[in-house]
Amino acid sequence: MKEIIEIDAIDRKIISIMQSDSSKSIQTIADQVNLTVNPCWRRIKRLEQAGIFGKRTVQLHHAKLGLRITAFIMLRTDQHSAAWLDQFTQAVNAVPEIVECHRMTGSVDYLLKVFVRDLTHHDQVYQRLIGLVPSLVDVSSTFSMENLKPGAIIESSTY
Image (cartoon, rainbow, N blue to C red; front, top):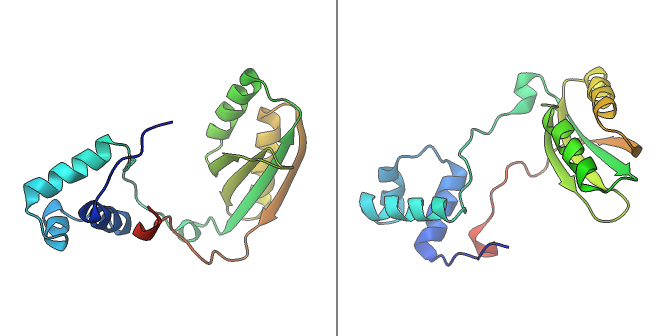
């Protein structure tokens, strides 16, 4: 397990700003946290090197791209070997509609988050998945009616 990084109130402000809009210039961020550019840049680099910031990406609105359905696929397997997990991981990474994959506790082994156009597209993803992954005992899906809290912003009061 990696070491927890000590951060102060300014780091928290920088993290909050970067989560909201990572495209802001260092000058804009520095102004918002009352620092000059160089100390702000050094803090951002320290947070990046510590692994607090992952890669910077653009948040897509999948529905505007025609991917209107969010499905959660629950998988159970009777295989738990390292070799099977490696094959499963490769299969999941080969299916671009799968945007998240979680290994779970409880009655479900894996939970996949999938964006698809419609039910036909979902069935195509399902067929591709079961063709790539052996030894699935149960595959079931549930569909999101509405996302009430989109985005992945973590409030500074939690860290």
